[in-house]
Image (cartoon, rainbow, N blue to C red; front, side, top):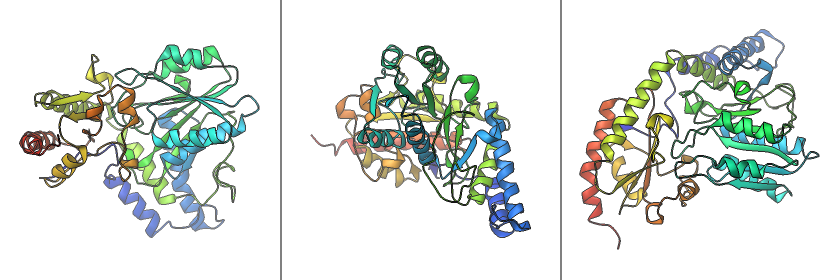
Length: 387
């Protein structure tokens, strides 16, 4: 049996996604900027995907920019708005638990003379609202907070954060990395008070190499990729038609019978947490004293006392169970998780934590297989623990 439980890293593309991508590769392979029929055919796929994504966000089509993925979307949001609004100020705010695609662009901006405030979080990963209020200044141009934490599944209170920001400084822009949240929740950025929102296709059964940045109309932002002026000069480069078409198909399908899909994910998560906590020396992170359904439906972070994460990961792999030891984007460069440190996980458990993440196609049988395997492996692996 196989259990793929690393869906926060990437998901398997839906059949509808594969089908439409094949169409664009086999038949409608023209350049969407070309002035002949092949170009027009390709452009239709881009336009249709834009309509689907915009409708899912209750946004205007002109507010949708297609990118190469979540990392580019986050870079464009942060660097593009920081540069465009530097006359207003050069102070930015984020949290200590952001993804590297937010954290590292901000380090780059600090090197360019910007000041960044990093907010603390509590044991469940929630932003310290008092600290946020105190941090916002007249020269604060941007706040960036993720919708769902990619390691522990914290669902941040984005609406409350937006209200606080706008009450303290209406000119401060609010960016949300929704890469782990989009597809799991119905997200309406303008209703929430969000100015910029990042999306990645391969987190919701779309293809890799395509993403979206929602930019609210009238927000000042500069492009970070220059060239032929595609997408109203905001993101130059020939559009990735197969990827964009696939993303549109994924969004359309994932939001069909959406409530039923999310209920399935929560049933998996609740069962997994209930059973894994029965195992000795196990701690589930990010769900202390809060209902499971107030966290994201697809992510569970578990620390296993006395076992290195890498050892357990490969032991599970030998049983055809696939998980992650943290953010997949950093998996080739192991380091202690900043998120786990920020929520106060004991130091001896920082290198003993595994992320299990589910998708709408994950079955209860896969969950039970993983649980049974853990029960078998853990006593054996602990015999070889380092003292």
